[in-house]
Length: 301
Image 1: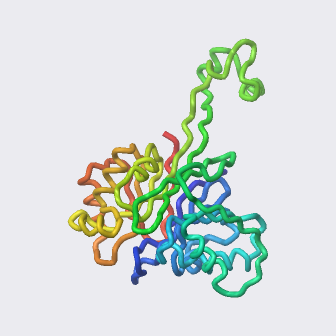
Image 2: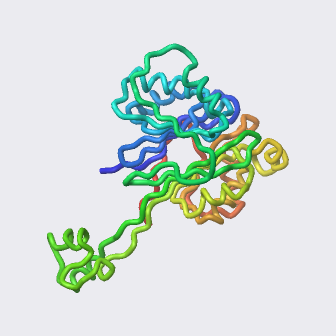
């Protein structure tokens, strides 16, 4: 049975706190693991969360500030130490190539795994697999930053009552699915489009077109809400979102489950982020992220 869940390794912005590690996240999707923004201490958080190096297939970095990338050195070395048996691909802003090179070769180690480098230079598709298309969109931050979006291809949902009405059962159902037609009955006659699931990861950014494009129609949106609404001016100055801004963007995009993360150390009450998100009009499922929590991708509507 395929697993689709989001594993939170760390939720702090800029510096870790007693209760929050630097950023770090892993999306489990049908046997693949996509790691996002590994900050300092990610290796230890992986151990605590039950995430192994063997689980990782892609490393996606939004930008090269330390709280989103300092853990790359350790994660890459761990992938090689554990001799991960499959290739791993790294995506990151092309303008930060020098930072990626420094982190990849921060110290001496033996390379045993093929790590592909696929830097991101513009909006568009980064990868296509049978179970998802990975895309990137440019965000608005003092350094170049990209958000990531994963879209499952649309499928078909067979409708039992229509199959029965046309007398199609047993092996003939599979035959119809493969061939698209059976005895004059088409796939459209007995099925409907099953919309593919959508996930997006939006970190350090002001409100911009990229935020809205990434969030559109998401089943699960993970988005930064570094500041509370009373500090909106500060958020804009530093290239960040408030809880209310993130929630309004999610509501406008029709997001089903919103995960807020990347919290400033200045705030001591996490429930205030939820309160402000609700006040901004988001009515869907809402999670204020905590380190080591797991968030399942919502079941199909």
